[in-house]
Image 1 (tube, rainbow, N blue to C red):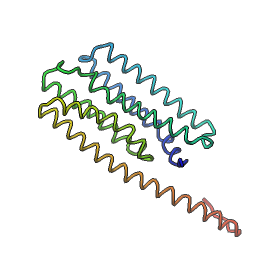
Image 2 (cartoon, rainbow, N blue to C red):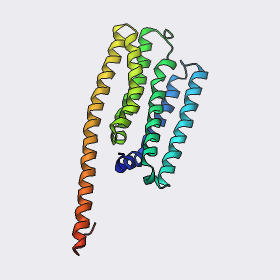
Image 3 (cartoon, rainbow, N blue to C red):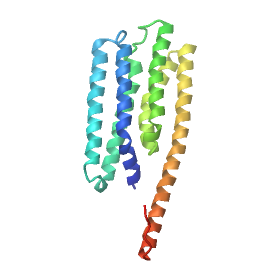
Image 4 (tube, rainbow, N blue to C red):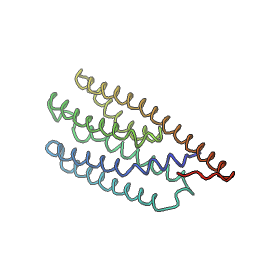
Length: 210
C-alpha cells in the first residue's frame, strides 16, 4: 500500500532538489571541460538537461492532476527518475576521467572533485528523498557505489582510500535517512490520529479551529 502523504512529500520538495542537482551538473560541466572529450561531456550534459526538464514537467503534472487516484504510478515514476538521475551521476567517474588519461595525483584530485559533488547531492537530497527509503537508495546507490568500486579497483592506496571513505560516508548518510524516514512516518501517524480525533469531537458539536 502506497502512502499518499509520502508521495505528496516527495513531489512537494522536488523542485528545489532538481534545481540543486542541475546546478551541480553545470558546475561539473564547467570544471571538466578541459579534460573530458567534448563529445562525451556535451552528450552527458544535454542528456542531463533534457532529463531534468522532464522531471520538472512530471512534478508540474503531478501538482495539476488528480494524483490520488493512481498513487502507485506516481511513486514508480519518481522512483525510476531517481534511479536514472543517480545513474547519470554514477557514470561520470567512468566517462569524465578515462583510465590512464591523467597522472596519479591529478586523477585523485579530479575523482575527489566528482565525489565531492555527489556526496553533497546525496546529503542535500536526504530531506527530500528520505520520505521513502527506497527512493533515497534508488538515487544514492547508483550515484556512489559504482564510482567507489572503480576507485578501489584502481589498485593503489590513494584511489582505494578515497573510494573507501566515500563508501563509509554514504553508509552513514543512509543510516541518517532511515532515522529521518521514521520521523516522517511518526508525523504522518500523529496527523492521522489528530484528524480522527477532530472529526469525533466535531460530531459532538464542538468546533475546533485550525
